[in-house]
Image (cartoon, rainbow, N blue to C red; front, side, top):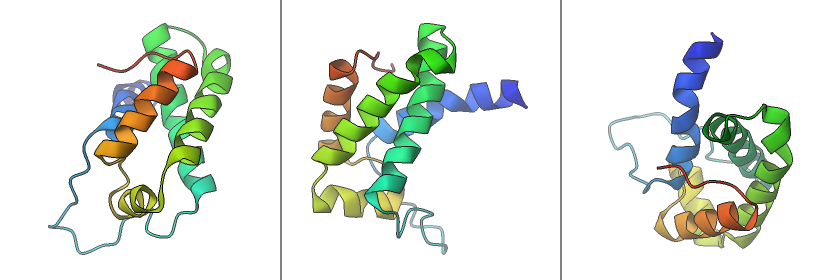
Length: 113
């Protein structure tokens, strides 16, 4: 279970930084359709923690605060259109990605490749 999660963990943070491409083949709503900024912040922090712990080869506890910093800074800087895009897709759009990358740097985290 842990190994399979670790294989998927990089996708969590990377998906937050990827260009948003809505799934037009799905008839179900995004799980983030009604997400408040707190829920978006929690999702971003959890994905960041998983990915950064692996990237930096550190225990999650040692990157958790920096990932909370990243999530707080990123979500605080999102405008209404970026939040609406995230709610539709579960991904940061292009302008939100730039804010996310700046937050990674400001919080002392590595940008995933």
